Length: 270
Ligand SMILES: [Fe+2]
Ligand SMILES: [Fe+2]
Image (cartoon, rainbow, N blue to C red):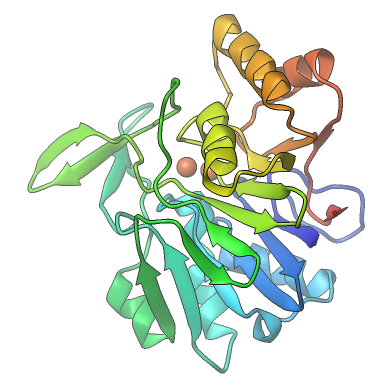
């Protein structure tokens, strides 16, 4: 498996790449290419792809981790940049209307309608169940939450707002034969829940946990539980970025072996 970070909060070390709040990664495995998420802004996504020598045309399918703007904002520009349509895999709940209330009201859901994306060639395959999208690429399905989660924001429905548990948060699991790589967008289901769910689903150890761990602002007890839990699960390597948080990243780096940060252009080969 080869994974390349295309969109991330940090610009990294190559000239010309743009760091921007959001997440997107390209995964190449068994001859196929899946794009996980599309970042916040299509211009930034396409710029970084071009700089890294990756064409939108070469992507075989898209996996959307959840329906927040910082993972889906690049969808429209990505579809417009392709001649052909593309299969998009995600949870059934991604198109719900969502908002954050602090510091002020703002929409945080997918900034496009399903219909306008379908008109541009999107073919949605929405499911809550675990599914093998392409050989060796498995959607986690809805993630069982046995520990704390990291839900944020509110759902807006019929003029009413309710807390959003971000049930649509899923991970992409890559089967490496003797283990798995788990790619998470924001980690709203709770990074421990995600890692344990992936192990239960596949019966294989996590060689690498990659993406946003959503620990920003987490209490010390939660950070300790995260480090202890991931250690006892035997997770081989952590690649933490996006919404992990700088202080929280430092905590993981101090308390666990094998922790690396993410940045645009970073390549992970397993
Ligand atoms: Fe995010
Ligand atoms: Fe999110």
